[in-house]
Image (cartoon, rainbow, N blue to C red; front, side, top):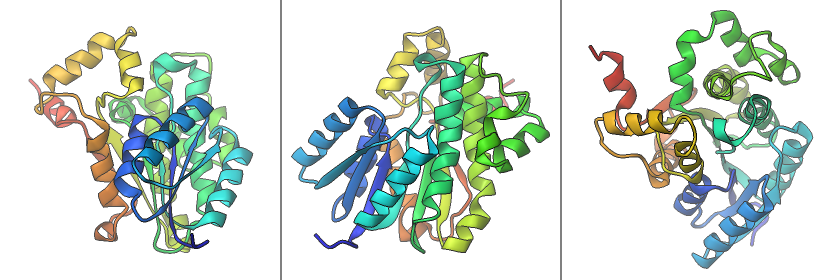
Length: 273
């Protein structure tokens, strides 16, 4: 296989990452990365059984050196045309500190490391959440600017970021931080010819959401599904279809955008009496 075949890197090998790899992987050198070797091996075996040639790497997105190592590995294996960062944990999966480290700092680490190695014409898509949009009004302009622009080493030092606080609050702040961090990075992306966008899913029935359904937030999530104009939860393939478009030449004029994909829940809630 040619050393500089077009490459696809998926960070986060859970259900969403697996669906995106399956949707985009044909004809590309596919690399998947995850913190969990078990999740990584399961996803790799599934994709290999579908006929894809897969390489795997473990990564801790909260550790810049680990992300930088992944960036060097992936860019050395291919012309890294598409990077999709799905890595994240939900409020039920860890502490507030862990949510901030993985979901917020992790995204900043990926942006900083991969803009240094991705070629002109490539695409970097980060998965955020409508939880960020729901939290936006509670985020001050000063905190928002910090989330968007401060050096990654200082990202978790703001007084409004309580590393010992509410995991739900941490998740919402982190996910809005993903959106504005990507928006603030488009000028640097311009220097390298890389487009950056975010996708903000609503309730997508991945293993992560199934875990949330068993938590204290379960009733709220069921309410969101019930109140959505598209009266179902989403599936990973819904997200994969949007990411495929954003990663394609047809989306070459789309940069620094955030796409809410939530079955209409946010729109229907905005003007509810």
